[in-house]
Length: 289
Image (tube, rainbow, N blue to C red; front, side, top):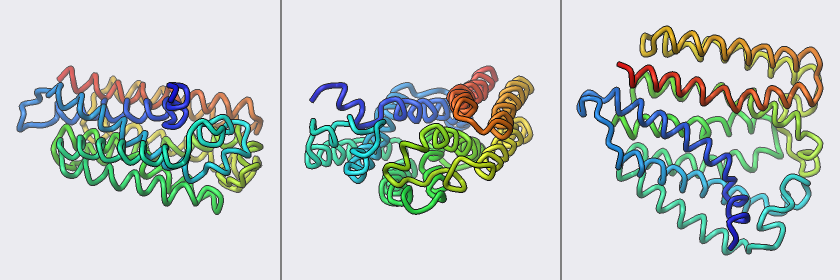
């Protein structure tokens, strides 16, 4: 099997972003952990990265197995290994199961809660979010849950249990996913329709979808300030989060005004920068304490 095919099977870029979020929040959780006096266990950090990568890759693998016939219909996905005939469904299934078991074992070795949540995220993403994509725009809400579990799992693995910070990092990534995915859905709506996917809020590129997407960027503003509001982050975190949220809000407003693909692309690319910047600022604040 070629790396190119494996990369497409596990959606490498998406998997990388998910693992990045988890690795950042693991470090935050480790610094917040009073029982270890804020000392970071780098071996556990490595286990978190590998385990998180395998679990996310497995979920994406199962997603592609389920959607193999639909992937053939879309220009964006027809060259994936299964629809392109470079890999059989059986081969992908065995690979997915191995990655799921290995990843869950590693995360469970760090923390039982992290292990259980990893199993839940795989099942929820593959067997709830995936089939819902053709039935209702509510799929984006359902998919945002396992998507936001990555930083939650990372923090819990580092901190040892669930606390208010864990809920905050979950909330930030949960809300962020709505403008992120709706921007992608706006750009790829024509391609998605070939497979019958309904991911825009109203099911199409219209004023209603633009309004709801803009509202999601508006909600992002107070949510991103939660670390500062609850005194877990300093003014630098709050200031950077505020600036990023205002820029994100501006991009959402431009989509509302223009309602074109170019504006949606700008919002989509803006979302790629928004989340890591906010998470890294939160991390740097903790490292500086």
